[in-house]
Amino acid sequence: MKVTSLDQLLQQELQDLYDAEKQLVRALPKMAKAASSEELREAITEHLEVTKGQVERIEQVFEALGAKAKSRPCAAMKGLISEGQEVTEEDAPEALKDLAVIGAAQRVEHYEMAGYGTARAMAERLGNKEAARLLQETLDEEKEADQKLTELADSLLQSVETTEAAPARKGSTARRAGGA
View 1 (cartoon, rainbow, N blue to C red):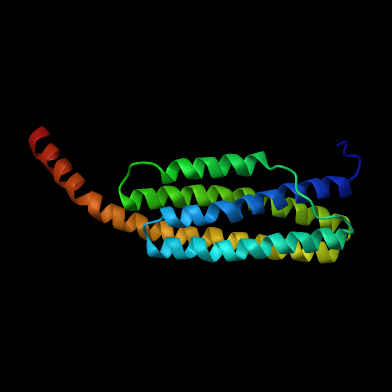
View 2: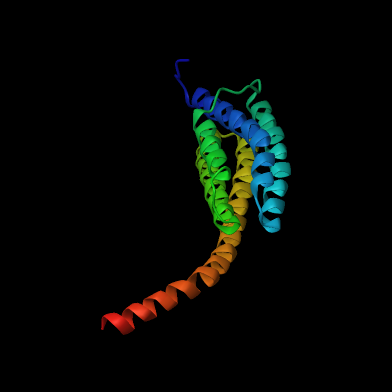
């Protein structure tokens, strides 16, 4: 498709985001199942419900633009989901696997934040306040999800540091005593 206007470019962005969100609706239950932390599982499950609402909101944005809601394949999200799936299949202690799942989920959130921020800016430039408002609402939800994931990661990192620090400290003390 040849893009000759900002309106067309915005529609392409929305088609990409629409497909990305639909892919996530299918992928998030698998990520939740792979999480060993109850808090992480709940956060992913909660975000699944938010994502379903975001799919509906994109349809509202298309409507606000007077366009038909349709998607175009989002290769980036396909790749991010594929990487996330690889992480869930790794042989690692539960806390480390959960941290890897969080990392994969945050890469998804950052991709979405970039897409929604760009689309919102385009809608604003086109003077479509309703589309811009809807896109900002989703952008805010993505930022909130990212923040929640960061908090979960911080909590998990503290537990990993606590369990891994004891052997590391013993070894470093022995090295200092014997090597000095």
